[in-house]
Length: 203
Image 1: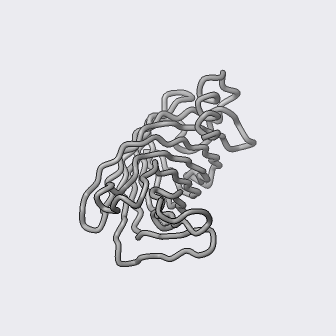
Image 2 (image 1 turned 90 degrees about the vertical axis):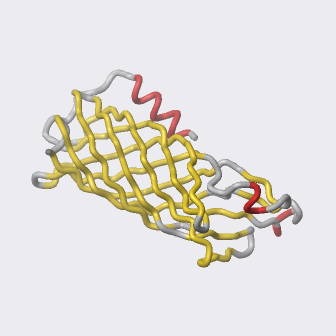
Image 3 (image 1 turned 135 degrees about the horizontal axis):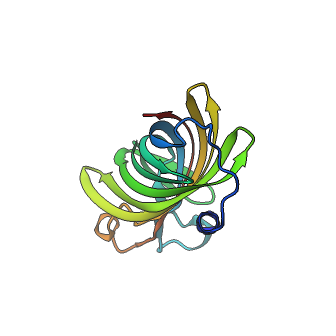
């Protein structure tokens, strides 16, 4: 969770010169982007010891997102909605098997508070922190899970738009219930990593 701690630190420290020429850096803006997502294990088979123990996790996938933001000086309030369709994956240190018959898609709503912390040439470096509300489609059943996500983004002007590259780390509740797995599995909090690109336009 070093990225989250760094985000908190950068939000609190005094800002350096903020970029004023980034489209969408003032007032309202709308961004669209895509991410490559990876997830940590959310359940482990306790019945099998050592390297053969199997971990269950959501499969790696691509996701899409839209973000509405309002900038106030160096600060930006955001509301993001996202979707990432995928299945489940069972893996140990030797082999990984994807179960495409189990739908484990995620819908996300996430408010966040962002701060520009540095100017990088014509661009800017920003960090954000906020809660997440995830709706998981676990094999036809809806599961709501709360979590937290921290983001680090670099934006550069691209004509009348802003090109955004960002990295996000998240922690949330397991998308499955104990009843879905049986007594042989131990549930764990779900860790996620997203690396993405997007375009931001002023409104």
